[in-house]
Amino acid sequence: MLALLNNLFFLLALCYCCIANGQKPVCGNEIFFTDSLSREKVKEADRIIANYLSQDYTNSRSEITIPVVVHIVWHQYEENLSDATVLSQVDAINRDFNAVNNDIQDVPNEFKPFIGNAGIRFCLAAIDPQGNPTTGIVRIQTNLSEIGLMDELFFASKGGSDAWDTDKYLNIWVANTGKLISGFGSYPNQTLPEKTGVIIHPKYFGINGHSKYGLGRVATHEIGHYFGLKHLWADDLDCDTDDDVIDTPPQNSGHTDCPSFPQSGCSQSEMFMNFMDYVDDPCMIMFTKGQSDRMLATINTYRSGLIDSDVICMMPHISENNSLLIYPNPSSDLFHCWYAIPQMRIIKYGLYNSVGQLVTTEEQLINQDFYINLQAFSPGVYFLKIDGIAHKLVKI
Image (cartoon, rainbow, N blue to C red; front, top):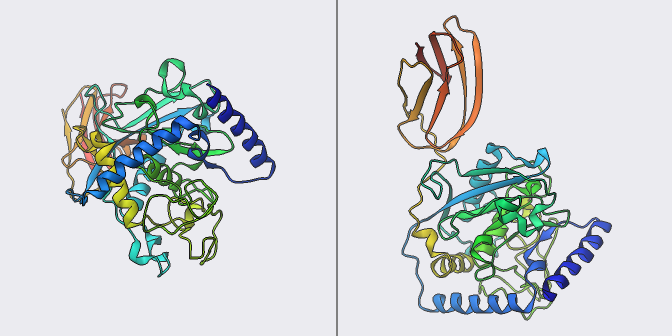
């Protein structure tokens, strides 16, 4: 309890200083997990991960797919982010964790040999813990402001959103973490199961237009912590401590904004463009091979339920030849629209009457199928226009 109060006092003091000086928000892992018990748990996790890596570790899977559930816990209307923003975040982390981000080419020549591809893909869950179809997005309106800093975030009975089985799903909570904290991710062995996952401030989630943190890389950074990565400077302001990854050069502190290359604080060039530094989104562009190995080792030791998960999920997919099946047709009310090939995307359709007048339009996130409800419409012939193709519906 004393450690918690000390952390809270430190957080409030740091928050005051940072706001007063106009400083950028920081990763909460540097603040919340500093008590002696947390440090011992980190050391234990590090020993287990290091032992796994020492056993001539090789990844036997060509690719690992992680089912994701996104809990949007909102207080102000602008915090209730769109489905499109959620999909943009999934796309962003898929690019970053597989080294297919366009700006990977900007890695300095000195560090190009160390670029890593973790082979980790993320997808929104299509089945919830009860076996029901889902888009993988949960929306909860809360009466608590800045709930992202509170234990209440993890409990529906207290105004938050209950975690889905954290052995099988990567839980991401999008919630207001105040003016200081951009987000934080559970380091292995640090949090109770019901609180294990990642928290991101809605201002920094997805492709959002923010000048500094608009490319979804706050989530990339925090998921890195969730998979066992530390800040490059290991949160100690000297050159002796290390992040336990051999191919990341030592640093004595983090970098901010977009520094010019090279930067040196420990007698050699520093890898400030790494996802585990504090630079702006446009300037963090790589994981290393060593970091990729450490993440895979963490998955195999602390997150193994994710790769053994039987959760069905849908990868974003659009096929020009993907046929849309509609049944029953004719129908008196509901028309079930079903794509032959599973896909997770935003669809926008227009419904027209027999003389070509638009009667309704809608945009929604689908994971393979959706419904058109014509119960309120008069019997007759209608045309559903989607993806440039018109489909005839008969309301009886």
